[in-house]
Amino acid sequence: MRSADASSPTRISPVEAHAKMTNEGYTYVDIRAEEDFEAGHPKGAINVPFAGGQLVAVMERTFAKDAPLILGCAKGVASARAARALVAAGFTRVLEQRAGWDGTRGTFGEILEPGWRRVGLPVAAGASEPSDR
Image 1 (cartoon, rainbow, N blue to C red):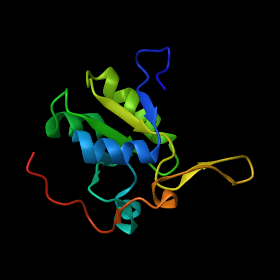
Image 2 (cartoon, rainbow, N blue to C red; image 1 turned 120 degrees about the vertical axis):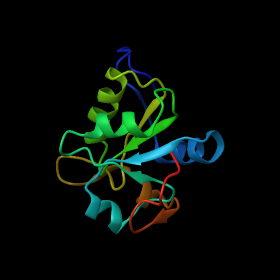
Image 3 (cartoon, rainbow, N blue to C red; image 1 turned 90 degrees about the vertical axis):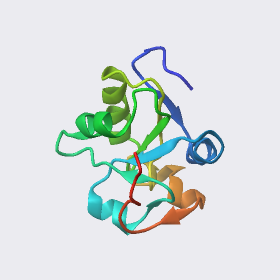
Image 4 (cartoon, one colour; image 1 turned 180 degrees about the vertical axis):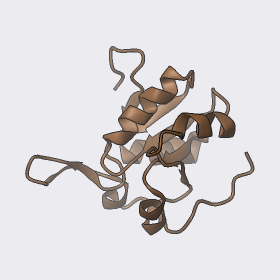
């Protein structure tokens, strides 16, 4: 569902993100801290941590502005901010995986929408695979 604000990327579910990766060549960029990524992440994802303020600079060095990208985090909060930052920097094909790795949570910690791992999509552990980009 696209927001009325053109600077807000489209938010998609984990299942939609997996389909985009599989069928349309999207790259999943997990923006969590390196240790969280290494503990488990979407299979095929690369890790570019959002913390530290270098996300946009690293993405500009790694990807073309029209590269098909999906951003994800733990719960879908930080990835929404990161996706907006990439759009503001001129990236044109940015999607945001709204439930993140674990899922969105309610006031009492209950899962409102399950994330990638809770849906049962393919997972991996360890560091990012080397990229030929």
